[in-house]
Length: 453
Image (cartoon, rainbow, N blue to C red; front, side, top):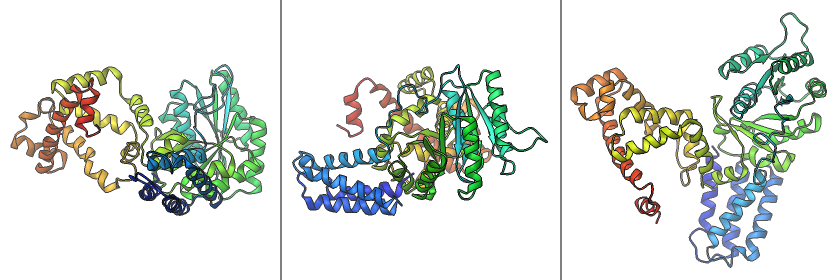
């Protein structure tokens, strides 16, 4: 995500990187390059001007020019400015759940999901419910989109996947969103549920009919949060849509969908300044688990190619059991790590979300890998090949001779060459893992090994 912006800003840093001293012209050239990068990313013009002016003012104030490492200081200023424009340090206020102001578990909180048709409200409603469940909440989905055919059915299918109840209009009853909400509230109160996520109708554009329905529902539901769901691919138009919804109905925050496909970043960078509303969540893929809390400081790091190690670790902790991780470390140290263990790790990585998004969180890698590069990782091919092996072969890869390789290739729909490459890579991986595991308690040795000393 945001690959184009990341690459162009990193090119801009070349004007100041690695220099023991830099001049005002160096700074001016770097800022001009960043300005063009932001404009090409479809960031709001007013936002770009404010960003450029504040960056130049601070960079020329002596903090950079008289610094021992002027290039690093300049990058830090840009990082701090990006963080501010994305919404600040992003630390959720005390007493909130993932930044949402919800009531305690003894009362029912209401979240109203707003947005234009096709923005992804229904899917985002289910994704938000899944995230709140992980944090101990007991959500209920309310199907209040009575305009789009099969909207309620789609919500019901998604709700079943995350084992969450859904409330919808009674068959044969007159279509009324307020009646559906009242039924949902009664159901929540009588079944000990504490959060109602209301999926509402959308239009191709904001019109009087849509606004009237949403205002009527808002007044009945008295929501704790009004979240706009916007398509990040629309660029700064998403910020304009948010501003209009805020003026007509009121907003407390924004969810950006299709963030994994957004190579520019105009929506994220424009929202806070144009609307004054925080970007709270981003959809990063098609799976219900592909939904992240938006942390401005972390995303600023991703844009600048610094990665986002904190989010990567959080994702890993969600799918990797601590005892299993310790057991894996022992196997690595003793060189008993098997193909069965490797298969488990591949599946754990898949649970963490799309591989491209995870690699973007790694420092120095963000924006530098294309889809073709990811195909070369061959994780899917490795999984299929290992699944075609017997238990004995997975436990001891050394017994896999020519005849076994041929059988495995036939069973996996691959070639003998691909099977041989997997086994060769696996052997190298085991050797490297053994070294890393033994260095786990020796940071200096690890730094030397990876050239970070």
